[in-house]
Length: 358
Image (tube, rainbow, N blue to C red; front, side, top):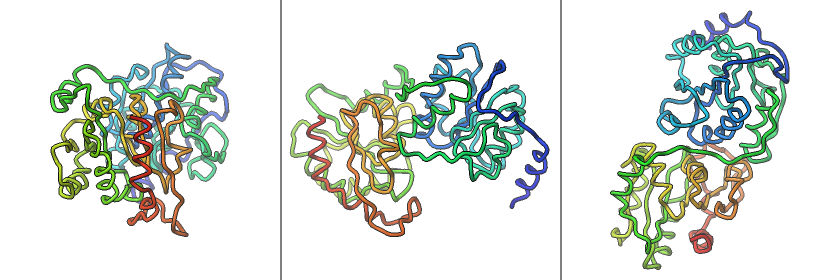
């Protein structure tokens, strides 16, 4: 245990929250903890929306990862955003900021321990709600009783259950992303899109190696797609994906019909690029959920992850997936560095799905 953890445990040991499964008294300010990955924050946008629809006069604050701030800064259902990267170095500074906001309720939607619950406690919130907390070391500070919640359905449905603690029942799982005209200006200048061409996005990178498809498979899919004269391939992603996209560019012959745009745009422009695509082929990673929020058709690649939990469960006619079984026992999950199970997904079967969608 680090010195930070020892100090924090000392500071919160005598703190108490109100125990209940339903808040009945008035509240003025709530805070949603969602300071992890882009996809997990997008999963929470239906929660933001449903809460604001029911409590338009309650101030809504979101605790987000600073890397994602620009993408969500225009969310109409959030009155304020505070950023925190989940590191101990900025813990007490963030706790002080939260304390100044006089928060009544904290919903820990997706935030990592051992920082999340102590941060909520030190915010001074009267109520702290955290689901799937039966094995959480801090569950005595949660207002709801320890409960194991098996996620066997689309994760957004699970996140919406948090709202039951304030009397809201909502089934609208559609994610939202708010972009504006200027986010598209540079994208349109680079893309030079025309009505005759179909723009097929390749998102090669993922949050873990275990979710990535193999380079050889992307090249095989490229060869199939470019049999069609009116198709063009767009390589999407951030700077960290350039290693993969650059390797891809070295493997292919006809580079004239491929645009390597990984790392070219800022996060909002990268989302706008996905919005301009006719279809995005992608592992289970942030751009899949950006595409879903923007109604861009997708083909998602699954093996280690479960499409029932994370493939879009709305607009199903445009959000397809291919799922293969895990090949190793035991499965190393996110720790896997050679994703043999992903190799089972053939380029041909992706191409067949793609032809039906485009």
